[in-house]
Length: 145
Image 1 (cartoon, rainbow, N blue to C red):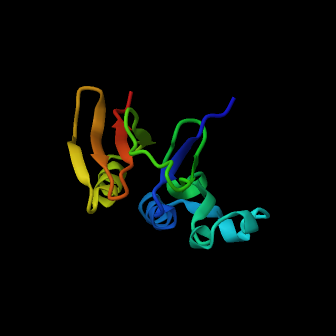
Image 2 (image 1 turned 30 degrees about the horizontal axis):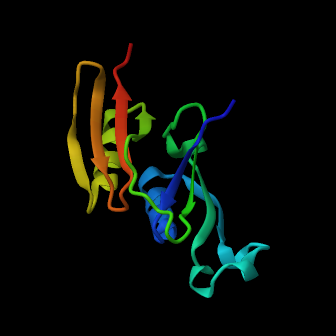
């Protein structure tokens, strides 16, 4: 079984994923607009440039782990269907405290810090934030065993 996070956006998916690519060090391996899809003629013109599907691969040298799978996916929510995210956080695990600090502060740019990144009893660094696109994140760097 694979489990990947799939984020929905209110028309700003492309900007969000370019931001995540920069912050997390991954690579966008697929980004398709509605205009590029076979169903393009069934979508209104104002949605042609909105994202139908995007995939950010965080494997390889990024050092970021989103569980066993390292894919973050998303799209723009169809008009009238977007809901503000609630009841979850996308959790990132890294190996180095400095990397946790860098990622946390990058994602927090123009966002809202819910719990400042700091040492906890379970981790070398842990923090929680809502980024500028409304996505909730936890950044965690476990203590060496």
